[in-house]
Length: 317
Image (tube, rainbow, N blue to C red; front, side, top):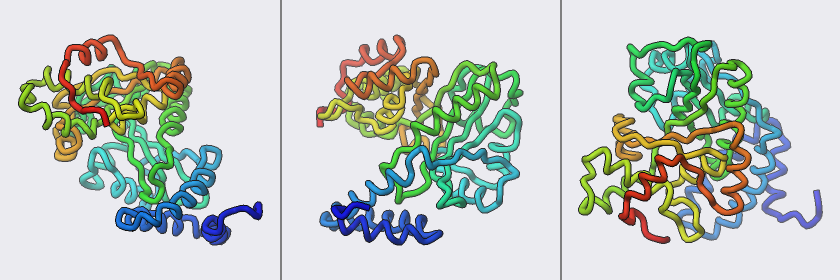
């Protein structure tokens, strides 16, 4: 440890030497983030937390573990509690997501917090790209045999620890899971998400007078414009999820109206979802393009939809 290390970092680092304290420090940062909203002076302390957490929770320390119906009950309880996209209503609902052939779930853990998932992803192995969350989760859905599937659908990705906000795990998780699944099942050729568009509701509210927002085709055009062309002052996508996946090297593949009709799906993005496609042969180049020039890679169909919308859903910020 160098002598120039800030005193705040020393204060945070020293307790971490005690077994079992890392999780408490993560909870401490969660409290700090809450308090910092009203006390800006705490921002400097949070920078120290974030700096240390980036090193403590880097990819080299993370362990990928499959989550299945045989996983310990205390881990399964946390999967239910932390699910942030498609709510898990009961133990039977969880069982339908984990036990059947063609369903997978994976989580990152840090050895210092072995009983606390950091982030997890739920996967459906399917034929073709599903366009409805409810169809994926339906009680009477068709079951695709894993060895007959050609698509891995990442239909729900949930960060678990509030105290690790802005510490990115999604990039490594999706790429690692896609890579492992491609080795497990050579028939898988498509790796794609079915993601919400959290900022779309504000966009639709602004455009309600100019567009028929009850028309699915017009909603799709607004969504395409918002994802591809609406930018912040720093030229990044306005939508937070649209910043995550293109930064990871994903392609914006397609949008679907009325694709998530759950209460949460309506609240997040008016029921509209987007597919981010992970082409394992192109993710690194797409990632470099986004990092260097903020270029978003999208299908021709998505670009055409965006161009068809002349409405400015979100102004420059």
